[in-house]
Image 1 (cartoon, rainbow, N blue to C red):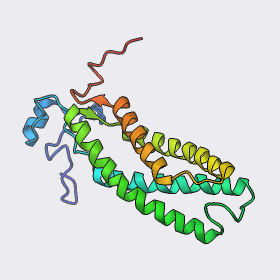
Image 2: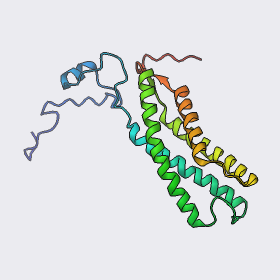
Image 3: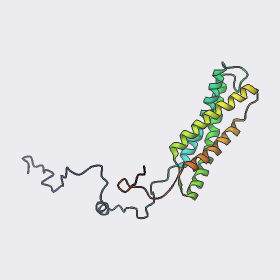
Image 4: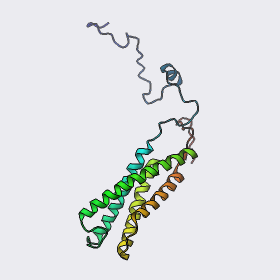
Length: 192
């Protein structure tokens, strides 16, 4: 006992194993004693990612990316008066319109993606889906806006966004991986 009545960790019977790796997962014996049951089915039992939140956010980003591409072409052509919009107020109105439409379409997109991925047993790679969709939207937006400017005939932005939805859905399904056992680093086999 210390002089001030404090009990040291050694005297209290606590283990001071300093050689133990703090990054090592707990042993199955420790998990059983803590009341947590290890997953015996081997499935990836993480919580379902909130598709109903991701879809509207992705849809809004797609709509605003389309507006960014249109503004880029408008700026390249020195902001002509006979374009999709004539002033900066038109940009804000166009952005608001495509942002709201993207949110609605994003909700439908995420619902379709959720049902298809669950029925096929696929884990969607959301980061890839997000970057791919934003990239394809910007490139498609640049091309369709330039075509609209050159022909003086507006390519329907909603038709363009519908095409982006279909291509993104296919890309998400193609790039996904099967749900199944999570690989442990100790048992993983790496091929050359």
